[in-house]
Image (cartoon, rainbow over the protein chains, first blue to last red):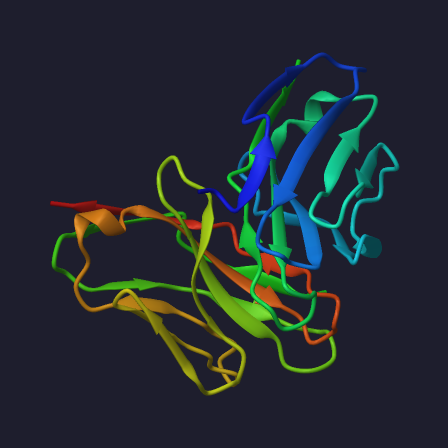
Length: 113
Length: 115
């Protein structure tokens, strides 16, 4: 059974719209993360949360807002979508956010037209 | 800031031959970084292949090895004899010495193993 679930797998959106990417982990972890991989670029760190609190933020734009309604959830709301937001978004989790291994979900592939 | 460089975007190797995928890093944060290799098989998510948190140590998994070389700032991935099932994208990653946990990834190297 998948331990980190990301929904949806694929998403097509129009410029200016808003979407929420879902991430749930069933590993009992306390830290969760978002990363993004745009075409021809490395995976880039976006956010990390620990015990549902923001720990680290590498995303300059306020259009990207993580939302943690439960300890094992970290959704990503993206507003005013732009074509440059097209990427695969990966959720990850770890026991804590220090020395522990991060486990990744399968990703949500977002295309903004 | 911290960064990782993988020079080869794609590597093609015949089955049973040896493999080396190069990774070098730059770490400017306090403390020694932790180093990782992740792998992404076709149609699947990112999986941890191996990690090394202490300089000078070697990590190994599934026949792959990588040594944390602090002097050369390298963490090359090697395998003595590849199999077709090793075809995947391999990512080198670094976690800086701070406690915040963020990973910095290289661009990835696509390994194609020819039977």
